[in-house]
Image 1 (cartoon, rainbow, N blue to C red):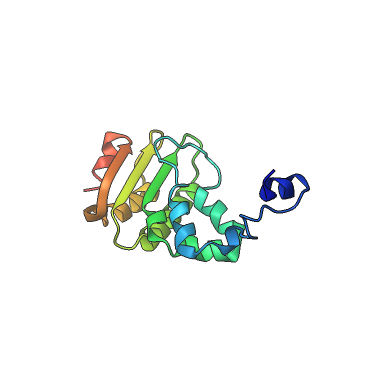
Image 2 (image 1 turned 45 degrees about the vertical axis):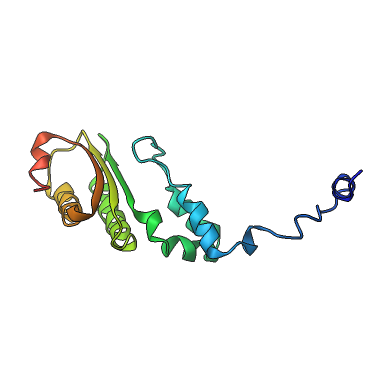
Length: 153
């Protein structure tokens, strides 16, 4: 029986692991792994905490890596529903602004779904903010009333 297998059966560490844990991975490797954790905004409907919020809450090191990796901030997904309140729109605006800042100059993938709200000054500021970065758009998906489209021009 191999030494590694014998050690594993006794409850010891596998010598091949040599005590390495995720904390020992270089920031560049973790950053690359994190990019695979970001869901497609059209397929993901978590409605709760975002993947980036979860990654940032793991530890200070992950928060630093997450906030300083522009590739993680290039997908912007905003969904409004029938019960959306003004506070929700303000939160979406602030979150979008943060994503635009942290993504640097990288191309953006944007999804905005607003089937229930009429165009208002609340949503208009968000749409204008996104329109300011139209040269960075790599992919855009808008589902909103036609009257809202004029706010993007």
